[in-house]
Length: 112
Length: 114
Image (tube, rainbow over the protein chains, first blue to last red):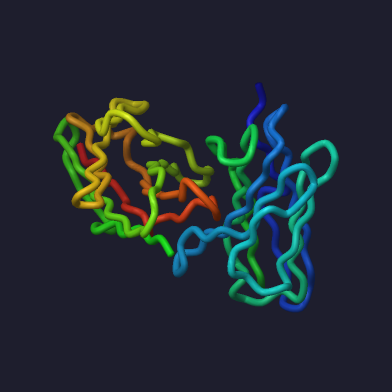
């Protein structure tokens, strides 16, 4: 069974731009969570989706948004990028809410 | 709100020596506990988890952890480390009710030296 895939793996953007990251969960998994990892703040929860509905949201500004499609694939969007948004963005999928989460390799976003 | 403290940011150890990575948590309600490992340029891999039952939990790659409720700790141990265990290790908690997102510690970098 294929693992969680994230595209692209690396991304370079400039301040003020917007970016969309994609996550394909393990086949059959219906829940997708997103985390941001930075050297300064560590791993922080962004949001969680299940059955196309956002079920949980972390403490991030409204510039960070996401959605989940009917096939459970998820995207997250960051608008008006800031230098501080440079991070590794990790996606994790689970069979249902509250099950074990399996992480993808992440998308490394660099904002110049 | 819950929090996780990993007391050591870096732990150097020689190959074949034992190691303990410390984790303490704070929560007003019951939690589930996890240890994840992250190799360079990779995502997180679950090493082991404590949901209920026996307080001694065995995981992959020879790691184990013990849940101590009175000390609110969940330390990770391995009796003999290998060079390949060099990685970043994260302790995480999740509430068993309500908001269930993972809260991570700041990580411990395990450096195994030959």
